[in-house]
Every structure is written in C-alpha cells, then in structure tokens.
Image 1: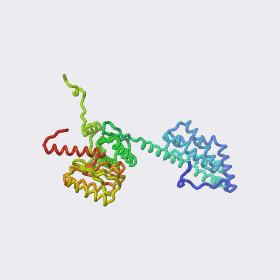
Image 2: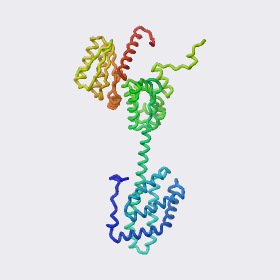
Image 3: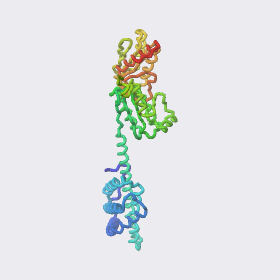
Image 4: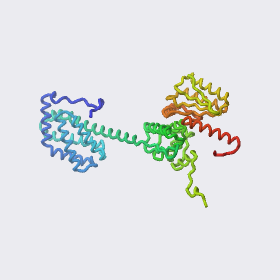
Amino acid sequence: MATKGKDALPPLPDPQALSESTAALLRELVAHLRQNRTQLREEWARRITRAQLLTAMTEEEIFAEATSVYDNYVEALETGTFEALQAYARNLSERIIPRGVETHEVVGIVLLLRDVLARSLFAKYHEDFDKLNRILDAYEPAANRIANTVAVGFVQERERIIRQQQEAIRELSTPVLQVRERLLILPIIGVIDPQRARQLTEQLLRAIRTNRAKVVVIDITGVAAMDSNVANHLVQTVEASRLLGATVIVTGLSPEIAQTLVTIGVDLSEMATVGDLQGGIEEAERLLGYKVLPLEEVTPKA
Amino acid sequence: MEVPILKQGHYLIASIQSALTDADLSQLREALIERVGRFRARGVIVDVTALDVMDSFAVRTLRDIAHMARLRGAETVIVGIQPEVAFAMVQLGLTLKGVSTALDLEEGLLFLDQQAQLRIERGTGRIDRG
C-alpha cells in the first residue's frame, strides 16, 4: 500500500549516507537492543500493563504482539527503511481494531517502548555523557519516525474500515417492494446521508415507471433521526413521484421526526402521512379502489 | 419544429417528439389554446416522454398551458416525465404544482375520463362509483 503524497514523511537519510560514526553508533545501538531483547520486552510489557493500556487484550496476547512490535522496531532502526514496519503496523491494526483497541493506546504503547529503550541507553552509557548524546542523536530521529509510522498506520487502517462500513451501509439498498398491483412500498431503515437519499429516490422513480405504480408508501419507522437535508430529500422524492403520476403516503414518522419537520418548516402540504405502515397500506388500497373484507362476509348466506 | 396535436374525442393530445426551442414551446402553447376553443375540448394531454431534459421555460410553459386550458374549460395532464427529468426538476425547484401528471398516455386518458365522470356526477347531484 503506497502512502499518499501528503502523508509521506521525508525519508530518513540513507544509513550508508550517514557519517561513518553515526552508522557505527546505530549498529552498536541495534546490537544492544538485540542482546537485551528479553529484558527490554518484559519491561515494556510491564509498563503497558501498569499504564492500563490494551485492556481489551489478554496478557499472553500483549506479550505476543509486543514481541513482534519490538522485533519490527529494531529492524526498522537497523535498516532505516520503514515499508516493512508500515505493512506490519497495518496488519497489526487490522487485527486489533475489531478488538476495540483505541488510537491513544497504540500511540501510548509505542511511546512507552521508545521510553524503555531510551532508559536502557541511559543505563548503559551513563558514564560517557558524550557518547550517550551521540547515541541519542542517532536513536531519536529513528525512534520518532517509528512512532509516527505505527500511529499513522493505525489511523489509516481505521479510516479504511470506516469507509468500508459506510459502503456496506450504502449498499444495504432498500428494496422497493410491490405489494399490490400499482402499489409500491419503500421501507427505509437506518441513516440517510445525501448520497443514499439520492440513490433511494432514483431507485423509487425507476420502480414507479417499471411497475406503473399509482401509490407509493414510504415507511420511515426505521429512520432514527432526520435533519433538514434529509427532510428536503423526502419532500423532493414525494414531488418527483407525483410528476410520474404516483401519490406518496409517508408512514412511521416518530414524534421526534414529526416535530423536526414542523420546526424546520418543511412544506408538508403535498405530503400525505399516516401514522403507521398498516394504516398507510390501508389508505393506499382505498385510493386504488380496493376494499379488503374478511371471508365470512363474502360467502353468500344460505 | 411544430408539435403534432391530435384530436381524440373530446381530448387533444400533443406528443413532443424531440427537444424544443423556446419559440417552439410558445408556439405549442398558442396552438393548444386555440384548438381547445375551436374543438371545445374537455381535456389536453401533453406527452413529454421523448424529452431528456426540461428547463425552467419548458416547465413554465406547461404550467401556462394547464392554467389557460382550465380557463377555457379543459383539464390538462402532463404525461411521460422521465425519472431523471423528474429528479432534476425537483432538485432545481421547478415544480408543476397545481398541474395534473400521469405516468403515460394510457394513464393520462384514464385520468381525464375519471375527471369527466366526476364532473357529470357533480352536475347531476348523484355520486355513483362506476
């Protein structure tokens, strides 16, 4: 997955292009991190638990992921390249987002690792302040870059999932159902954004023409809330349907939506409404000239 | 481009075949109103099935036709508005408020028959769901 232009960070100086001493320092740093892998990882996992992060995961899971993150971290420090880390970050995010892990947790644990490794450097080089400074000069840009990469990777994965879910919701395309000759029902469920509203309207108009519908019942029982945009879309749908010769009956307005419509001053003169779907269908049948009778009345009496 | 106007019983049917200029539309309006008077028509159907697009002038002309026809004793029905056209119209706020519409020619004729029937019943003071 390529990063978009505006998200791409400037590349770190190529390790080969770094001065010999800096490259040597990085190598020394990486060797130290590999040597002390076990203790540093454990220290990190302890800090994660103490900071009460990743509470959605078990200790075993945390330790397993910690191992992977640690190794990828050190690898990125060593190679100076971040594609592998990016890929890992995305992969990790894909796994932990459904578990309910939040952004602040991911950023938190990466920063904790940064701290744990920095502390170990202080411990190792505390007697040679000058060397410590040089090691930190090599370590800090790389460590910051890593933290950035992981956090951004996580956020991008979240955004990808959100987009995917939005698509899925949009594609929960409400079917337009014919329940009688010339009578269509359009049950609307969920959140209506402008795009979905447009899609519903187009779908309905085509169905009116195909089924030669004279009455349409639009049921909005399943619509939780309506703002002025959606309300206007509804009014437009009613008017457009009328242009195709169909009468629209809107049913299932909740008290909240009824209040919203009145408050925002939507022109309701053209919109026929009935309390519930049953009432709406009965009204529609009446308009079409149907009369529904229980069977006893139809059977002739002796 | 002149729009053919057919007479069917007491009804006039104008079938628009292709996109019309503003001049064509005005001419259609004059022709229809003239014929409503000449033939004492009771109904007018304007079929816009062939139109992919209707601008504000076209919509206003149709409204004018309906109002003028009513003043001369005829009911007007606009038929054949395409889904895409209807959608565009409502988005642009071009309404045909107060003008009857129907899906197609068949529905339009049915509608005019029903209206005529209702007028007769009102005239005789008898409500009879025929």
